[in-house]
Length: 306
Image 1 (cartoon, rainbow, N blue to C red):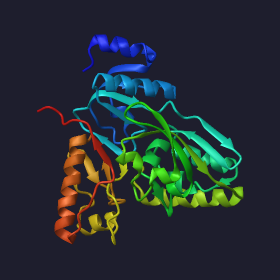
Image 2 (cartoon, helix red, strand yellow):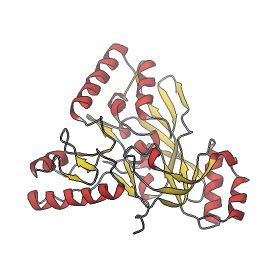
Image 3 (cartoon, one colour):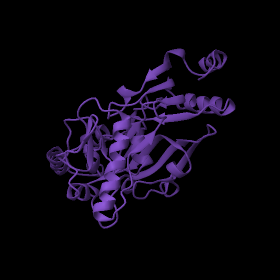
Image 4 (cartoon, one colour):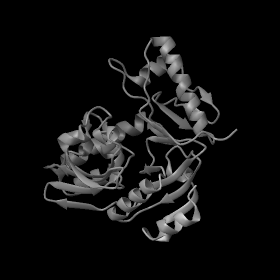
Protein backbone atom coordinates (compact mmCIF):
# COMPACT_ATOMS: atom_id res chain seq x y z
CA UNK A 1 0.00 0.00 0.00
CA UNK A 2 1.26 3.48 -0.84
CA UNK A 3 1.55 5.83 2.13
CA UNK A 4 -0.24 9.18 2.05
CA UNK A 5 3.02 11.08 1.60
CA UNK A 6 3.85 9.01 -1.45
CA UNK A 7 0.33 9.45 -2.79
CA UNK A 8 0.75 13.20 -2.50
CA UNK A 9 3.98 12.98 -4.49
CA UNK A 10 2.30 10.80 -7.10
CA UNK A 11 -0.50 13.36 -7.42
CA UNK A 12 2.06 15.96 -8.48
CA UNK A 13 3.04 13.76 -11.42
CA UNK A 14 -0.41 12.86 -12.71
CA UNK A 15 -3.82 14.52 -12.22
CA UNK A 16 -5.57 13.22 -9.11
CA UNK A 17 -8.76 12.36 -10.99
CA UNK A 18 -6.79 9.70 -12.90
CA UNK A 19 -5.91 7.87 -9.67
CA UNK A 20 -8.36 5.43 -8.04
CA UNK A 21 -7.72 3.85 -4.63
CA UNK A 22 -8.64 0.23 -3.79
CA UNK A 23 -10.26 -0.21 -7.18
CA UNK A 24 -12.06 -3.46 -8.04
CA UNK A 25 -10.57 -5.03 -11.16
CA UNK A 26 -13.54 -7.25 -12.04
CA UNK A 27 -14.98 -4.67 -14.41
CA UNK A 28 -11.69 -4.48 -16.31
CA UNK A 29 -11.40 -8.16 -17.28
CA UNK A 30 -13.32 -10.25 -19.78
CA UNK A 31 -13.71 -13.06 -17.24
CA UNK A 32 -15.38 -10.65 -14.77
CA UNK A 33 -13.12 -11.92 -12.00
CA UNK A 34 -10.35 -10.46 -9.87
CA UNK A 35 -9.70 -8.63 -6.63
CA UNK A 36 -8.77 -5.01 -5.96
CA UNK A 37 -5.80 -2.89 -6.98
CA UNK A 38 -4.17 -0.72 -4.34
CA UNK A 39 -3.99 2.04 -6.94
CA UNK A 40 -5.46 2.08 -10.44
CA UNK A 41 -4.03 4.85 -12.61
CA UNK A 42 -5.22 5.82 -16.10
CA UNK A 43 -2.63 8.10 -17.74
CA UNK A 44 -3.62 10.18 -20.75
CA UNK A 45 -0.10 11.00 -22.00
CA UNK A 46 2.99 8.88 -22.58
CA UNK A 47 4.99 11.25 -20.39
CA UNK A 48 2.69 10.43 -17.48
CA UNK A 49 3.43 6.73 -17.92
CA UNK A 50 7.14 7.50 -17.86
CA UNK A 51 6.77 9.65 -14.73
CA UNK A 52 4.80 6.96 -12.86
CA UNK A 53 7.39 4.32 -13.79
CA UNK A 54 10.22 6.48 -12.47
CA UNK A 55 8.24 7.22 -9.30
CA UNK A 56 7.56 3.53 -8.72
CA UNK A 57 11.20 2.60 -9.32
CA UNK A 58 12.38 5.31 -6.92
CA UNK A 59 10.11 4.01 -4.14
CA UNK A 60 10.34 0.29 -5.01
CA UNK A 61 6.61 -0.01 -5.75
CA UNK A 62 5.47 -2.80 -8.10
CA UNK A 63 3.71 -1.75 -11.32
CA UNK A 64 1.34 -3.90 -13.36
CA UNK A 65 0.11 -2.79 -16.77
CA UNK A 66 -3.40 -3.61 -17.89
CA UNK A 67 -5.00 -3.27 -21.31
CA UNK A 68 -8.57 -4.34 -21.92
CA UNK A 69 -8.19 -7.55 -19.91
CA UNK A 70 -9.20 -9.98 -22.65
CA UNK A 71 -6.51 -12.65 -22.25
CA UNK A 72 -5.76 -12.36 -18.56
CA UNK A 73 -6.94 -13.73 -15.23
CA UNK A 74 -6.47 -11.51 -12.19
CA UNK A 75 -6.45 -13.52 -8.98
CA UNK A 76 -9.05 -12.90 -6.29
CA UNK A 77 -6.51 -11.31 -3.93
CA UNK A 78 -6.00 -8.47 -6.37
CA UNK A 79 -2.79 -6.63 -7.25
CA UNK A 80 -0.51 -4.79 -4.86
CA UNK A 81 1.09 -1.48 -5.74
CA UNK A 82 0.09 0.34 -8.92
CA UNK A 83 -2.01 -0.91 -11.82
CA UNK A 84 -1.44 1.28 -14.87
CA UNK A 85 -4.28 1.22 -17.37
CA UNK A 86 -3.51 2.01 -21.01
CA UNK A 87 -7.13 2.28 -22.11
CA UNK A 88 -6.91 6.04 -22.66
CA UNK A 89 -4.38 5.56 -25.47
CA UNK A 90 -6.85 4.96 -28.28
CA UNK A 91 -5.79 7.45 -30.95
CA UNK A 92 -5.69 6.08 -34.50
CA UNK A 93 -3.94 7.88 -37.37
CA UNK A 94 -4.10 6.70 -40.98
CA UNK A 95 -1.27 7.88 -43.23
CA UNK A 96 -1.80 6.44 -46.70
CA UNK A 97 -0.97 2.74 -46.18
CA UNK A 98 0.17 3.01 -42.55
CA UNK A 99 -1.91 2.99 -39.37
CA UNK A 100 -0.47 4.40 -36.15
CA UNK A 101 -2.41 3.21 -33.12
CA UNK A 102 -2.35 3.76 -29.36
CA UNK A 103 -1.96 0.62 -27.28
CA UNK A 104 -5.37 0.91 -25.65
CA UNK A 105 -7.31 0.80 -28.90
CA UNK A 106 -9.30 -2.39 -29.55
CA UNK A 107 -7.73 -4.33 -32.40
CA UNK A 108 -11.22 -5.15 -33.70
CA UNK A 109 -11.90 -1.43 -34.09
CA UNK A 110 -8.55 -0.91 -35.81
CA UNK A 111 -9.29 -3.67 -38.33
CA UNK A 112 -12.55 -1.88 -39.17
CA UNK A 113 -10.82 1.47 -39.56
CA UNK A 114 -8.35 -0.19 -41.93
CA UNK A 115 -11.28 -1.58 -43.91
CA UNK A 116 -12.96 1.82 -44.09
CA UNK A 117 -9.76 3.22 -45.60
CA UNK A 118 -9.61 0.34 -48.11
CA UNK A 119 -6.51 -1.12 -46.43
CA UNK A 120 -5.92 -4.87 -46.32
CA UNK A 121 -3.74 -6.86 -43.92
CA UNK A 122 -5.66 -6.67 -40.63
CA UNK A 123 -8.73 -8.69 -41.59
CA UNK A 124 -7.53 -11.60 -39.43
CA UNK A 125 -7.93 -9.38 -36.35
CA UNK A 126 -11.60 -8.56 -36.89
CA UNK A 127 -12.62 -10.98 -34.14
CA UNK A 128 -9.71 -10.78 -31.69
CA UNK A 129 -11.07 -9.28 -28.43
CA UNK A 130 -7.88 -7.56 -27.34
CA UNK A 131 -6.10 -4.23 -27.29
CA UNK A 132 -3.27 -3.27 -29.62
CA UNK A 133 -0.81 -3.38 -26.73
CA UNK A 134 -1.82 -6.89 -25.74
CA UNK A 135 -1.86 -8.03 -29.36
CA UNK A 136 1.74 -6.90 -29.90
CA UNK A 137 2.81 -8.29 -26.51
CA UNK A 138 1.74 -11.81 -27.47
CA UNK A 139 1.91 -11.54 -31.27
CA UNK A 140 -1.81 -12.24 -31.44
CA UNK A 141 -3.13 -14.09 -34.43
CA UNK A 142 -6.13 -15.86 -35.90
CA UNK A 143 -7.17 -17.59 -39.11
CA UNK A 144 -3.70 -17.63 -40.63
CA UNK A 145 -2.67 -14.07 -39.81
CA UNK A 146 -0.69 -12.56 -36.94
CA UNK A 147 0.70 -9.23 -35.79
CA UNK A 148 4.21 -9.91 -37.07
CA UNK A 149 2.82 -10.04 -40.63
CA UNK A 150 1.92 -6.36 -40.67
CA UNK A 151 3.66 -4.44 -37.87
CA UNK A 152 6.44 -1.97 -38.72
CA UNK A 153 7.57 -0.75 -35.30
CA UNK A 154 6.32 -0.03 -31.79
CA UNK A 155 6.86 2.66 -29.17
CA UNK A 156 7.43 1.12 -25.73
CA UNK A 157 8.36 2.08 -22.18
CA UNK A 158 10.83 0.12 -20.05
CA UNK A 159 11.01 -0.43 -16.29
CA UNK A 160 13.17 2.67 -15.87
CA UNK A 161 10.52 4.83 -17.52
CA UNK A 162 12.47 5.36 -20.75
CA UNK A 163 10.36 5.60 -23.92
CA UNK A 164 11.94 3.66 -26.79
CA UNK A 165 11.10 2.73 -30.39
CA UNK A 166 11.62 -0.90 -31.44
CA UNK A 167 11.73 -2.08 -35.03
CA UNK A 168 9.87 -5.17 -36.19
CA UNK A 169 13.11 -7.15 -35.90
CA UNK A 170 13.76 -5.88 -32.37
CA UNK A 171 10.26 -6.94 -31.32
CA UNK A 172 11.29 -10.58 -31.99
CA UNK A 173 7.72 -11.67 -32.68
CA UNK A 174 7.07 -15.40 -32.72
CA UNK A 175 4.20 -17.69 -31.79
CA UNK A 176 2.56 -15.89 -28.85
CA UNK A 177 5.91 -14.41 -27.76
CA UNK A 178 7.91 -11.21 -28.24
CA UNK A 179 10.81 -9.25 -26.77
CA UNK A 180 8.12 -7.16 -25.06
CA UNK A 181 7.60 -10.13 -22.74
CA UNK A 182 11.23 -11.16 -22.26
CA UNK A 183 12.49 -7.60 -21.66
CA UNK A 184 9.55 -6.53 -19.45
CA UNK A 185 8.53 -3.69 -21.75
CA UNK A 186 5.09 -2.19 -22.30
CA UNK A 187 3.66 -1.10 -25.64
CA UNK A 188 2.47 2.50 -25.88
CA UNK A 189 1.88 2.68 -29.62
CA UNK A 190 2.24 0.53 -32.74
CA UNK A 191 2.60 1.31 -36.43
CA UNK A 192 1.31 -1.13 -39.06
CA UNK A 193 2.18 -1.37 -42.75
CA UNK A 194 -0.86 -2.35 -44.82
CA UNK A 195 -1.72 -2.45 -48.52
CA UNK A 196 -4.37 -0.78 -50.62
CA UNK A 197 -7.18 -3.21 -51.30
CA UNK A 198 -10.68 -3.61 -52.66
CA UNK A 199 -13.34 -2.73 -50.08
CA UNK A 200 -15.71 -5.46 -51.27
CA UNK A 201 -13.02 -8.13 -50.96
CA UNK A 202 -11.89 -6.89 -47.54
CA UNK A 203 -15.47 -6.81 -46.22
CA UNK A 204 -16.21 -10.28 -47.58
CA UNK A 205 -13.20 -11.73 -45.80
CA UNK A 206 -14.12 -10.03 -42.52
CA UNK A 207 -17.73 -11.22 -42.81
CA UNK A 208 -16.52 -14.78 -43.37
CA UNK A 209 -14.17 -14.71 -40.38
CA UNK A 210 -16.82 -13.14 -38.16
CA UNK A 211 -19.33 -15.83 -39.09
CA UNK A 212 -16.81 -18.60 -38.42
CA UNK A 213 -15.97 -17.10 -35.04
CA UNK A 214 -19.61 -16.70 -34.01
CA UNK A 215 -20.39 -20.27 -35.01
CA UNK A 216 -17.47 -21.81 -33.12
CA UNK A 217 -16.77 -19.63 -30.09
CA UNK A 218 -18.89 -19.22 -26.91
CA UNK A 219 -19.30 -15.46 -27.16
CA UNK A 220 -22.42 -15.49 -25.00
CA UNK A 221 -20.40 -15.97 -21.78
CA UNK A 222 -17.51 -14.08 -20.16
CA UNK A 223 -14.20 -15.80 -20.89
CA UNK A 224 -10.50 -15.11 -21.29
CA UNK A 225 -10.45 -16.33 -24.88
CA UNK A 226 -8.36 -19.29 -25.94
CA UNK A 227 -6.85 -20.62 -22.70
CA UNK A 228 -4.01 -22.84 -23.95
CA UNK A 229 -1.25 -22.50 -26.51
CA UNK A 230 -1.38 -24.82 -29.51
CA UNK A 231 0.80 -27.84 -28.64
CA UNK A 232 3.10 -29.04 -31.45
CA UNK A 233 1.24 -31.45 -33.70
CA UNK A 234 -2.07 -31.03 -31.88
CA UNK A 235 -4.96 -28.68 -31.22
CA UNK A 236 -5.63 -27.89 -27.57
CA UNK A 237 -9.41 -27.80 -27.97
CA UNK A 238 -9.44 -31.18 -29.69
CA UNK A 239 -7.34 -32.78 -26.94
CA UNK A 240 -9.62 -31.35 -24.26
CA UNK A 241 -12.69 -32.58 -26.12
CA UNK A 242 -11.22 -36.06 -26.56
CA UNK A 243 -10.51 -36.19 -22.82
CA UNK A 244 -14.24 -35.79 -22.23
CA UNK A 245 -13.95 -32.47 -20.45
CA UNK A 246 -16.57 -30.39 -22.27
CA UNK A 247 -19.21 -29.30 -19.80
CA UNK A 248 -17.02 -30.04 -16.79
CA UNK A 249 -17.60 -27.42 -14.13
CA UNK A 250 -15.64 -26.18 -11.14
CA UNK A 251 -17.41 -23.53 -9.09
CA UNK A 252 -18.90 -21.08 -11.55
CA UNK A 253 -16.66 -21.82 -14.54
CA UNK A 254 -17.07 -24.48 -17.19
CA UNK A 255 -15.20 -25.98 -20.12
CA UNK A 256 -17.30 -24.68 -22.99
CA UNK A 257 -19.62 -27.16 -24.65
CA UNK A 258 -19.32 -25.08 -27.85
CA UNK A 259 -15.51 -24.95 -28.06
CA UNK A 260 -13.39 -26.98 -25.65
CA UNK A 261 -10.51 -24.50 -25.89
CA UNK A 262 -12.53 -21.95 -23.93
CA UNK A 263 -13.33 -21.85 -20.21
CA UNK A 264 -16.42 -19.73 -19.63
CA UNK A 265 -17.81 -18.00 -16.57
CA UNK A 266 -21.35 -19.37 -16.41
CA UNK A 267 -22.31 -18.62 -12.80
CA UNK A 268 -20.32 -15.92 -10.96
CA UNK A 269 -17.08 -17.87 -11.19
CA UNK A 270 -13.92 -16.66 -9.49
CA UNK A 271 -10.30 -16.47 -10.55
CA UNK A 272 -9.65 -19.36 -8.18
CA UNK A 273 -12.24 -21.42 -10.08
CA UNK A 274 -10.36 -20.61 -13.30
CA UNK A 275 -7.00 -21.61 -11.90
CA UNK A 276 -8.35 -24.88 -10.52
CA UNK A 277 -10.02 -25.66 -13.84
CA UNK A 278 -6.86 -24.92 -15.82
CA UNK A 279 -4.86 -27.24 -13.57
CA UNK A 280 -7.53 -29.96 -13.82
CA UNK A 281 -7.64 -29.74 -17.62
CA UNK A 282 -3.85 -29.90 -17.82
CA UNK A 283 -3.68 -32.97 -15.57
CA UNK A 284 -6.52 -34.75 -17.37
CA UNK A 285 -5.14 -34.14 -20.88
CA UNK A 286 -1.67 -35.21 -19.76
CA UNK A 287 -3.08 -38.46 -18.40
CA UNK A 288 -5.35 -39.05 -21.39
CA UNK A 289 -3.08 -38.03 -24.27
CA UNK A 290 0.39 -37.59 -22.79
CA UNK A 291 0.45 -33.94 -23.89
CA UNK A 292 1.29 -31.13 -21.48
CA UNK A 293 -0.83 -28.07 -22.23
CA UNK A 294 0.72 -24.66 -21.65
CA UNK A 295 -1.53 -21.72 -20.77
CA UNK A 296 -1.78 -18.90 -23.26
CA UNK A 297 -3.75 -16.77 -20.83
CA UNK A 298 -1.74 -14.70 -18.33
CA UNK A 299 -2.50 -15.24 -14.64
CA UNK A 300 -1.43 -12.38 -12.35
CA UNK A 301 -2.06 -11.00 -8.89
CA UNK A 302 -2.29 -12.56 -5.45
CA UNK A 303 -4.32 -15.40 -4.08
CA UNK A 304 -7.26 -14.44 -1.87
CA UNK A 305 -6.55 -14.62 1.85
CA UNK A 306 -8.04 -17.63 3.58
